[in-house]
Image (tube, rainbow, N blue to C red; front, side):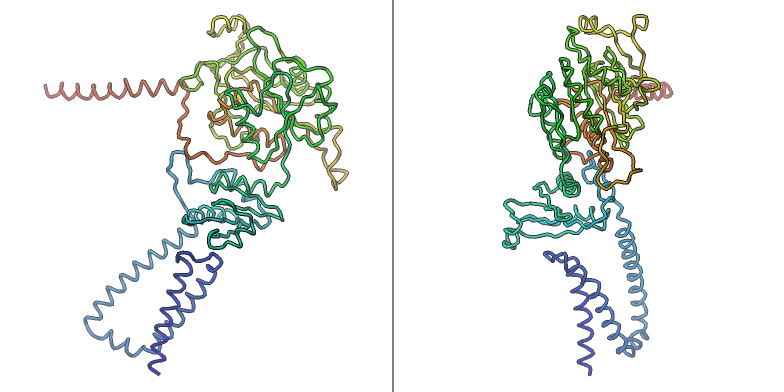
Length: 526
């Protein structure tokens, strides 16, 4: 009988040890985690039974003085351990973390949180790794599971599970496969950007098509030069857009698979049939991203027909250039104004993030709108800015001086505007009720195309703004947010005024305070 009782004690200890190993042991499959709690509970029950059979021995041991003192010490240790367990339990439930890295690289982006909170069907994330420790992937995906109970994860060593790796066509590690409703997306980028982009593509399914118009001197989406749009096109592809080109002079109509038509910096005007094709596209629910630069030095090449089209959508493209000597990035000229976000879905999560526009014209909404179409301000210049109207003198001297008597218009001025309206010729969505609202036509108008070039897209919030405009046009409001930052991006963007203040503070104010303090001490002692 005593042998059986002794076995109970060792069995209880073994069950608790097994529970700890199953939950935190190295190399244990995640599918085993559910067994840790039953094992621990069984261990505690067996240990309690053992203690009940030995109650007389335990009582006698507490009767001597040494054991009484020892029990006090043991009780203190038990209380301390209970406090630690309580703190660990609370922190495990609350999952509170502080990220002090320069780029917030360990904080989940707003866009990822929005996508996860919007999930209403199960998603499986499979991670294939090799010799590297999978703990970093477990920690990364634990954040995903925290924000959505729909996320399930599996971790597989591709070198040990060769058959499974061959089944999923694993040729490189790490590889992350995201599965949703029979669709799957994969990426070799096992960080938040890669996983979220794959999740986004799997959930959305078919990519939206965005055509960039060519043939009028527009930006080239395949050019890697400073003024090209290759970086912008790659960013759109990561956001699940399919990027294409179109020459309207050679097309009878804009293709039916087009979700967005983008016109980026035309230098010559459009022909009449091209403009009519754009108008027909908008009437049937198309979306337009219109980016027109300020007038050129020779005052030629104005896309007058597009400026007139913008006027029909409630926006007046000014024959000017916005100048801002105050709100500009440090080291840049007053011809690169910094725009502040306004109340609009495109800039919903921007906070105070600024965007920079190398040589921009005003796109102020027309008061009262045009034919029932009322434009909204998306980005504005600062109150210190103005719209320079004497473009010829500006190019000749390279200097801007505010002179309202010569037609200069004081700021702030709108740099980005947006308009939406029901599409009169749009076919109703399949299965929609007769009373359902018609599909919308949406237009975003920008007074600059340089802000999205390879040279400027990484400045401030330019990339987020550009992608948010595309997602708003595509009516994908759930994807409008601030995206995950590049961990290597540690730059601090200062306006010229902030840079000057910092220089004066470091070179004059601090030394002045120290010198004044030293002089005061010397004067008192003298």
